[in-house]
Image 1 (tube, rainbow, N blue to C red):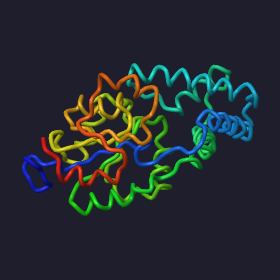
Image 2 (cartoon, rainbow, N blue to C red; image 1 turned 90 degrees about the vertical axis):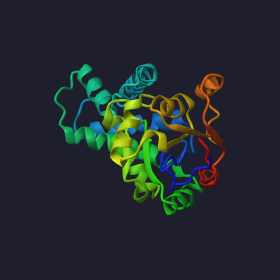
Image 3 (cartoon, one colour; image 1 turned 45 degrees about the vertical axis):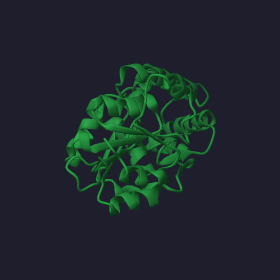
Image 4 (cartoon, helix red, strand yellow; image 1 turned 60 degrees about the vertical axis):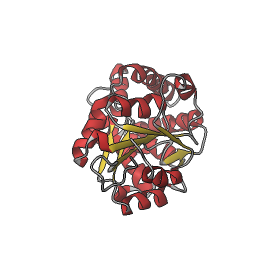
Length: 255
């Protein structure tokens, strides 16, 4: 049976991933992260913290890479704030005031925020879905809540999403089903009436299936080693190349 938003078992809610789905990064990630870590160290020095401007950025990137490796298997989110404070304590800088950490992280993230761009078809697609009566939400894996919130505002997407779930706020990452269930609870939605749209098989698609949601894989930013490793084992319910294809897909959705 073809479903529509008015049917008993229709898709009524659409959850979106953020990075690689609604927005994209237009620069070399490693180069930008190197510059960002240097800005972080410079900000800490401005607050009279004794950090080396060469060694500290390297140590911070090592800590972040260790976090990246751990998060893929544990699905537990360690915030950048936690990683920064832990590194400072290792270097004997204890009890650094919160306002200093927040200001330093804001300066660091400002570097990468300059390189995130909204997809050309994101706003038209979201406008179409909202006009058709779908409830919309974001479920994003990220280690800093303030960074994601600024990216959403920068992209002009705030008004579309009454619910924005960020792993740094929840403490769990996709594909853990709990972060999806929390989003559904906030939206008053049922899993069988919800679709997750994302670019990452191991997080978005597997996570949706773990939580009892249907899944749509968007592939224009999906040519990554992680996705290639899962091509034979994680199968989305549908695949699109661009967000503009989504409204018609949902109109013809059959469960």
